[in-house]
Amino acid sequence: MSVIVIGLSHRSAPVELRERFAFSSDKIPNALEAMRSAGLTTEGVVLSTCNRVEIYAVTPLAPAEAFAKMRQFLINHHAYDGALGDELYTFAEPESLHHLFKVASGLDSMVIGETEIFGQLKQAYDLAFTHKQTGARLNKAFQRAFNVAKHIRTATNIQRGSVSVMSAAVELAEKIFASLAEHEVLVIGAGETSEKTARALLSRGACGVVVTNRSPERAAALAAELGGRSVPFEQWPDEFEKIDIAVSSTSAPHHILDRATLEPLMRRRKHRPLLLIDIAVPRDIAPDVSKLDHVYLYNVDDLKAIADEYLKLRHEELDRCNAIIAEKVAALLEANKFAMAGRP
Amino acid sequence: MAWFTDRHCFLLAVLIYGLSTVYSVFLWRKGFRRDEWLNYCLLAGGVAIHTLAMTKRGLTLHSCPVNNLYEATTFLLWALGLASLVYSLLPRLKFLSAFTAPVLFTIGVFALMPALDPPLGPKPEFSGAVRSLHAATILQSYGAFGLAAVAAGMFLMQRHDLKAHKLRALLSLLPSIQRLEFVTFRLVLVGFSLLTIGLIAGSQLPRPAGDNYFNDPKVVWSALLWFAYLESLVAYKFFGRASRRFAIGVIILFAFLLLTFWITNLFSAMHQQ
Image (cartoon, rainbow over all chains, first blue to last red; front, top):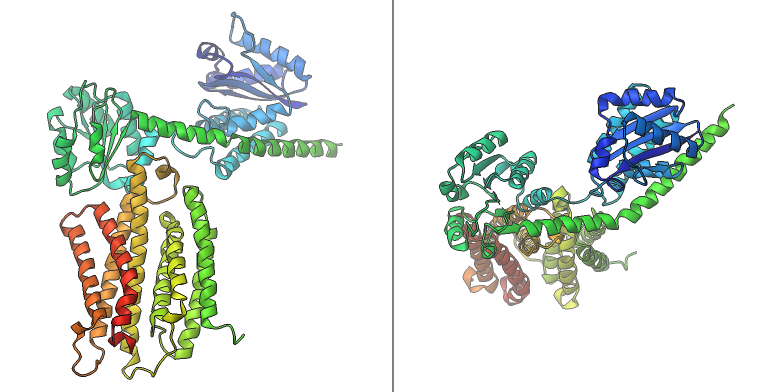
């Protein structure tokens, strides 16, 4: 009996297909039980996220036979009547374990090194474990996978850095200010990205948020949602004395903040550092404001460049991560062989 | 082991500071990305041997070893190295030692010049306690000013990288610029307080009859230095001097201190006794 994997992911299938094969968590225990009753598996875990649907199983059948029968099971279970080719991939040992370790470590994710998948895999395993759908083989394989993911996180730089515009903005703020707890954020223009950036800053400890927008109702609604206050659009420059981070994303066709406006405001701020994040296109803030002392201006391209650089660094770490995984898979297979030999 | 004098000990310490300097260049080239303890250990080793060198000299003299330029310089470097080791223990200032090592190495090499360490003449006739307090606090203040200059250098580097949108600013494990600014200010304040205490202690020392303090170039130089640091602190704290200008000022003042300290000492009759 060996561990096998069958599934589809963002690498092999478009979202339309992934959603057809997705499992809601309340239906997973029944699906696992159905596979076991049909004699396809003795142990099983279903991982179903927006980017992947995978079944990790221990099967008494030969891998080729198991793959064919499980493929049919998936088609029947989801009443899928379309064409299905290479979108559904399969792995037998040792590739199945290698794949599991890669998934747990975020190496197979859309954004390499992301950590959300670790939590999702843990939930999927807990669900199967709670419903007694796992046994010695999968328990050991998953525990090892979680350990390997933690080891890779600490031993390599695969999860280092910000790979989104929002997190890059937060990281910048943390390199300028000693602590975000004493700094307020001004959101100019209630767009989606500025809202997310403000949320990210608040989640890292920013002490408050002020929202301004051409539509006062929208500003008030977003301020209420973020637990801050709103100010009329005409009055936002007055806030510059109090705030230390400004996120701008209006749809204005021209600059709404230029050097001539900012210079006297900086004097009123008594030269405290000011982080300006301009995520509007066309830009809201004139580039020459960055020449002012204490002003740190980043536009959307700057933030994207930071995120891309980090992503590049993560890709450079892949070889190290794969080497660790290969070593750990070999150790697990060796341990399994030893356990099998010890059985009467 | 009698042949192994305090100067040999100090030479060994300087060699270790040199190793630390080489390693600091490597860390700088790597963008201060790794949480690196090797450099800290090198510097700690250097400071330990440096302490031994000073202890040996102190035991020989039966007083604080600050009687000539060599001793004064080694004391200054020791204060700088020790303060750097303590500050480097703070998680966000762990790379301070990498910035301090080149300062310790270059000044250390200079201090090893034999001309700076002439044989001691007759012992000064005045009280040793006030004299030791005067010399020790003043040299410790120079150490604090040196460390402030190092922190100011880190501030300027981080500020430049952030302004120029260099990824190194984010990848390095250096502290935020606000923290560096705060540390620089605090160190200058500490240095200034020590300098004030040292100067007050110096004014209590007996001097040859008829001598005026302000005829001595070292006293005039010290007073100038005191006013320059006071101006820097007051302008920054109360008159909104920009952080960049403050940091540059701290570096320039320390460079001035290092370059002129020797000269004023050589021309000061009071400090040649």
